[in-house]
Image (tube, rainbow over all chains, first blue to last red; front, side, top):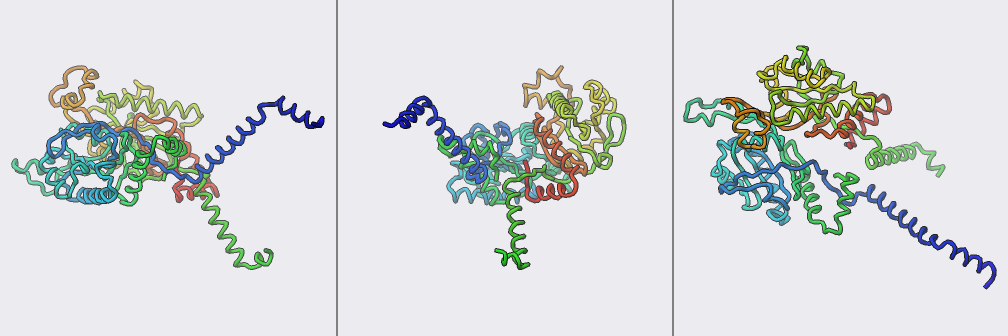
Length: 246
Length: 241
């Protein structure tokens, strides 16, 4: 062994950490490049978490209690209507029917995703009336729930907590005799759909009629996140951290 | 290469390519962000605690954060709103700002929220510079409900206590027959100097987000020339935070 070789060997022995440091730097560089690539390419997209959805227990058309806790673990698309409505509500319900069909096509209905229609007119929308209405629109049992409840609980939930604006107004051409007093009102109300994830977090609010492709994209994002294997969860958390929103 | 650049068509192609590349880079990297223009705010004409008219016209040129409540509230909402307003005021003042923003609280129970009651509320909370607004019930309902889309409704206080027994401890005595309480969506609405709704928040207010939004709207408003064009491009490409 020459003198130079001996010197080089002794230098390597004197600085045993250099190899590890170099490897660490390379690892940091690779991780940095991956992070930048992730931020630019956004291979995983998520919907923002907008806050906790309200908790409730209401009544289904069979008169059984059904609440937010019963729906945990499933993605829920809500809408808020009243069945006497002759303006926007039938169109909203028709859209829910279309979403139901698309969810059935994907085999998500009832398993991964459920639809929930809540009336804000519980005085007229009794469980029996909701049953008739849900059948009229072909609601699938266990896939599309129609809910009513005590008047004050509904007001608290729909108006106060979901923040859906509705206001009772006297109906035009309303009969004023005592027998029909209950028919003498109508509602001015907002068009609102709310998407809630499996953990009870609001992920999107739609303040107009749905764009079906958009809502199906959103549902798919939330379902994918819900069904991501545990090892892949950090990737979804990273997507939240960098706000990789569609 | 040089012969390519000698032709005008080539320059045109190169310029278009550069412009497209620039637009793509703008969309991808979003170097400038703006707060969305959500909708037109409603026209309104209410009075403040001093009896002065406050309307969408008098507020032209000012940013306004609206909150909603009633002085007769026993659910804790009004306390939350006042605490949020104070926290926002303090956060903006700490940055040396805040003078551009008016904090407006619309009090919606005409019978309870008289001008005197609003004055008392302002004094109690050292909030003389806030706008504590009121007006006839139908006008207020039109502004808050149909205008801003914020739900509130009077219900029998006794019914509310049955529905929410946890509120009973906040109530001094059994409610009198006919006494009303209010259900309300806990919302704040940020409106810009042109009465355009720019943001909607839930209570409790996220102060950091609100301060960020106020500063971004002010920055956008004060922009001129090329910067204003870039801001409009940011709106066009939905470059939102």
